Structure formats: C-alpha cells, structure tokens
Image (cartoon, rainbow, N blue to C red; front, side):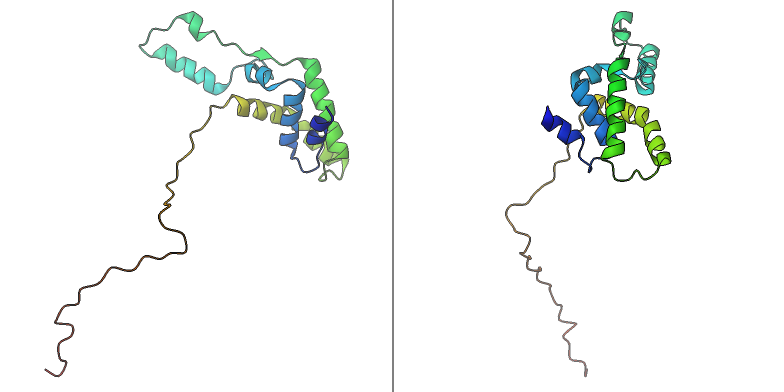
Length: 158
C-alpha cells in the first residue's frame, strides 16, 4: 500500500495524472470503465445510438439500451477529492496562494471525467514503420553514374 501512496504523492505528477492514479487505486480500473461521474452517457455514445436508430439495420431495443453507465460512489469520490487536496497542499510545487489551490480544486471533476474517458477509449493501432536492416545510418549509397553526351565535351574552338 505504501508504494501506491508513494506513486500517487510524487511531486512530479501533474494534477490530471494524480487524479487518475487516485481513482485507479481507490475505485479500480474495471469499475471506472463501467461508470461515469454523473451516470450520463457520453455525447459520442448518444450520437452512435441515434445513428443506429436511423439506420435500416434491425437491432433489438434491449441491445440498444443494454449499456447504462453506473454512477460513481459519492463517498469514494469524496475520499479521492480529499487525497487530491492533500496532494495539492503538500506535494504540488505550483501552488503558491490559496487562489491557486481553489482553482486546481475546481478542476477535480474535469480531471475525473477525462481520466474515465481515457480508460474507455478504444486502443489505437500503432503505425508500423519500415526499418531497413540492410543498411546502417552511417552508410551512404553511391550516386548513379550520369551519362555524359559527346556534345558537352565538344571542342569549344569550333
């Protein structure tokens, strides 16, 4: 447990990273992927459902409304907020005044929403880069030979 606490409370974390680590430690990544802060579906999810309703494909209404996100537990969220405030006061180096502290405290809900949406985001495909193992970076290919026509080497006196 101490290693998780030490990982969260490092002063090098950004506020968003700190909130994400606190949420994963307190609530768990599996639960976070099923929940939202307000139990409201995202705009993207609502738009996708509207497109499904408008399309000609027949999907049962149970399948369309099968996913209703749960709301995060208020007590666990309050504990996460308290840990976040503790980190801001004691470990974050950019907090100089109470005004800075209150501004960062106001961003807590935004950080929660962003970290949950990051967990729900589908995995992106990596672009495969072609590495040529046959030649190293230091080697330079010889230029191709250029054909010189006879007209160029003609005698200039004529």
